[in-house]
Image: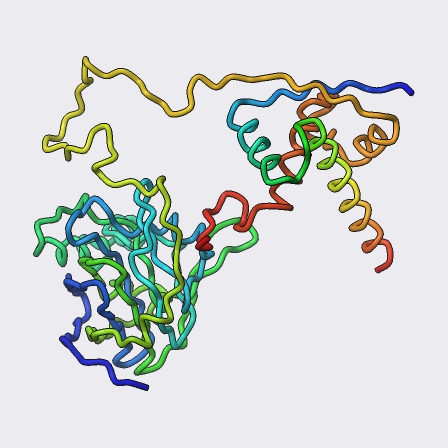
Amino acid sequence: MTSRPIISEFVMEPGTGKAIELLKGQILRIEQVEGGQCADFNCFNLHDYKEFMHCGRTRTVHGFHPTTGTFMWSAPPRERAMLYILEDTVGRNDVLFPRCSAYVYEASYGFAVHTNCHDIQAEAQREYGLTPDDVHDSFNLFMCTGVDQDGHAFMTRQTTRAGDHVDLLALMDVLAVPNVCGADVMKTSNFALKPLKLTVFVATEADLAKVPNTPKLASQRTPKDFRNPAIKSDRPLRRDPAYRAEFPNTPIVVTELSIALDPEELAMFNAVKRTDIYGDDDAAALRDLLFSWWEERFLQAHAGAPSIESK
Amino acid sequence: MAETIVRLRLNQQQLELIDRTIAQGVAPDRVSLVRLALREYAAARKADAATETAR
């Protein structure tokens, strides 16, 4: 394997984070020093902080535990692949939990002040002029989580060891903001705070060749496509008297389409129609059948999730 | 032969998806596409039920 040139190395001490300019084609390695430490992570488009990594979009595409071979996506309407997970020696990350916050430690544990991922992220990115309101939900590296039978997310201990790491390849210039998760009174990092090592590499041609193509779509909009591209600079909200609503594809117009079912077709329909949901509304049941069939036959992604297959 | 009329109510976006599917050659027109959907959907459920029974 071709060795990667190292650009920088940094150790994040417990209770801290670091904002790092990671340019397209560079790799950020987040590495266990002792083992057993969760890292919270988010990133921004380096040239437009309004574009940031969105856990909701990412988990919709890749599930609750994204690992090697998946992407970190920006929020709608950008929806671009920002980073590619090139390597993950553990394979257990989380995009279910938000970053922990001061409120959690005060409300549940009684701390007036306690290390927490929101405040650590905020302090790290303050170096670049961002505010605490600019912290977004984190991609939680090495965090072991799941969903219990009652529908609640839970966390448990991790089994990472020194040297375990995740390599994130930048697909655009980003401000990457990892931090040492501040949770020492939860199982997240096995009840202790440990340092994490950061290394920035130049990706090799072999690294870059591993990244699958993703779609380039008209719906991936940037400020040049916005009706209002200006970033609001004051806090109160006031109605714009010149506002005229321009919702896409409105008004929604319904057209009737008559379908004549012969006895055989009617029998088929009666055998499968969802009377449990639609009762005797056969029109609604047939519409459900039509689009359920379409999903089964043509949809490449999970229902409701964006396809990332490049055509 | 007695026929039963079902009046589907579809909005312009749903019709667009149907029309794009027709344009791919899946069916010659909207009504035919709905009929195809019914037959394939019912056949798939019948096959699933048969598999379940065989277990």
